[in-house]
Structure formats: structure tokens, C-alpha cells
Image (cartoon, protein in one colour):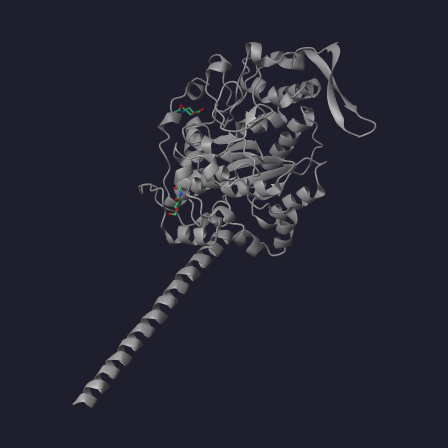
Length: 459
Ligand SMILES: *[C@@H]1O[C@H](CO)[C@@H](O)[C@H](O)[C@H]1NC(C)=O
Ligand SMILES: *[C@@H]1O[C@H](CO)[C@@H](O)[C@H](O)[C@H]1NC(C)=O
């Protein structure tokens, strides 16, 4: 009797073990299968971006995401900086978050690392997170955006920015100061080789501070972009230290509201710094260092051609495709560009002057009221004397840190400038995480604010 019981017990134990092992094999296989499905999907995505899977946009947004894609992206550390994976970003976004709670440094990635990784482009795209968004909405597919990135240092930060705004159906022109490190240019070429629809400008400029070449670099990219097969609707230019505050889907919804008008800043009156365009400027080369600087002469510069009235603005903006085409081919725009060669910081006059022209009909221009009175939403920078800044400023512009995040979240602009990867990188880390979570959840925030602006209706 006792023996029989023992046998019986043994058998049921064996049976249990068998069930357990079978279950484990089944679960493991299922897990692999999920992984496999995901990689097949992203491989398909690469080769045929037109048939990319599409998500619906009416799911409720939750700040934490749990989809298979998101779990994988967080596991692989494709969101934020790998080193900061343990940072609690919701705390950084709350008003009680303090800079002292967050990392001040991340290990910098040298350009050489990207160069060696780029020997295998498939792997490059994967390990650097350029495939972290396996889906894109139909609305976004139908509305490609072009971006111009100008930089002269901190390549790892540029890659971080590019990854944040990268979607395979958009297009990206990289432009590098031709006198910067050769490494930097090679890094840009590696990105262009490995990441679809990213290219290096066909002509690089030797950038002189406050000089014409800075403007020319953008114009070169715009020329290349018009030739590119992607039929982008708007182009947004930016420096490498900028970072988005909106997802690609939100950008598309906002730009659709713009309905073909540009978003270009306009400043008139006392803040115009008129000496920069009332006198001719020349370039001088320091014979010792070879450095080129721009200096003012005492000779007066005639007003701009074709009755243009000078307006000041930012070097950065959101430009519609017809506007860009106009800039590149219209005789009057070309003449204004020529006039700009003798102006100091011409990038702060050329776009604004065109955009607010009341004499020459410029596509997407604003002619209704005072340039200063309309909003400008391309990029938020916190200027000394006007706006808050938790830590330091450079050339009176705030370098953002985590304590600036609650303020940044309340902004309406599409981008914010500046961030330094070497100054509280948690700020970049958490913004990237927020945008990633929003994007992967498929939902965009309320954009009703962007409807019915005077600069859209009255242009
Ligand atoms: C994003 O989602 C992850 C995963 O659920 C979560 O840990 C993180 O706190 C979220 N971050 C933000 C900024 O919402
Ligand atoms: C958008 O622009 C088109 C053509 O420029 C115009 O006919 C239309 O009324 C505009 N739509 C809105 C909502 O302003």
C-alpha cells in the first residue's frame, strides 16, 4: 500500500515536471516569435516605406507605454541615453524635481565609434535606434517634412537630435562647417550612407561668425532638398543644440493648420540693430591665424532692391515649399540675397524681409499687420532679461536643464534651443522619452491652439 502511494506520488511529480517543461518551451518559442515578427516588420518597413503599418490615432495617451515595440525599445536602450535608463523622468517633469537629483554627465561617444559602427549599416540603424518607430500614421506619410541640421561639434548630440526627429519618409540635409574637424564631416557622411533620406549638403560653407556663409549653408541645403525625390511640404532649419517639443505627428497637424504660410519671426523698430544693414561690411583674414571676421566699414549701404523693407527675425524658421522654390529661383529674391552679402548676420534679415514683404508677392508671406504682433512658433529660446533659466546662459541664451522642463512643457513652440549634452543631459534624455512615449502610443496632444492664427488667416 505504502509502496503504491510512493509510486503514485512519483508519477504525478513526473507529470507535473513534463507539463512545466512543455509550458516553458512553448513560452520561449512564443517570445522568440514575437521578436522575430518585430524584426521582420521593421525590415519590411525599410524596403517599402509606402506600405508601412499604420496605427489609429484615437487611443488614449498614457505617460507609460507597454506595447511590444516600447518594451523592446526600452530593453535595447533606444530611448534617451543608455546610461540614464534608471532616471525617473516623470519626476524631472514635475515642478518639485531638482537638478541635483539628476545626472550631470553622460559618457561621450566619439565620432570614431559611429564610423566603425557604420561598416554594417543594418546593424548601425538598429543599435543607434533609427528603427525605434516601426509604424507611422497615414497622415504623416502624406505630409513629409524636410529638416536642415547645421552643426560644428558634439556629433553624439547631433545623432541624438536626428534620431528624435527621424522618420524614414521625411528628408534630412546635414551641413557642417567646412573648417570643423574632418571627423565631423566623416560622421555626417556615415549617417548619410546608413540612414535612408539623410544626406550631406552638396556644398559646404566655411562658416564665418555673423557672416553670409551661415545663410548660404541653409540655401545650399534648400537647393538640394528641392531636387530630392521626397515631396516635402515644409522645411525647418536648426542648429545641433536644438531639440523638439512636439512629435512628428503633432508637427504634421500643426503644419497642416498653417495651410502654406511660413512661420518666420518679425521684428521692427528699436530692436532691429540697424547698423548691421545701414553700412557695408567686409571680410578680413587674420594673416597669422587665417581666421576670417566680418567688419563694418564707414560706407553706407543702399537700401535693399525691389522696394523690400528690412525686417529682422531669427535665422531659424518654418518655410513652405513654394517659399523655398521662390527663394531659389525668383530674380527679386536672388537680388535680395546678393544685397545680403554686405550685411552683418544676414540670416537674421533675409528670411524676415522676404516673409513680410508688401511689395513683392512672396509665397506664404505675412502682410496683414505689424510683423511683431504675430506669434512665432518654430523655436523657443530663453533670452536673458526676459525669460526664466534654471542654470547658465551662453551668449545670453539659456542652456536648459531638468528644472527648465516644466516650463518647456508649457511652451507652444515646436522646438527649444539650446541644450548641451555636457550640461545636465537628463533634460534631453527625458524630452526624448516623453516624445517617444507619445509617438509610440499613437496619440497627439491637443493642437487647437494652432488654429485661427492671424498669420494664417490674414496672409
Ligand atoms: C515612458 O514610458 C516608460 C515605460 O512605460 C516609463 O517608464 C516612463 O516613465 C515614461 N516616461 C514618460 C516621460 O512618460
Ligand atoms: C488655405 O489656403 C487656400 C489657398 O491658399 C485657401 O483657399 C483656403 O481658404 C485656406 N484655408 C483656410 C482654412 O484658411
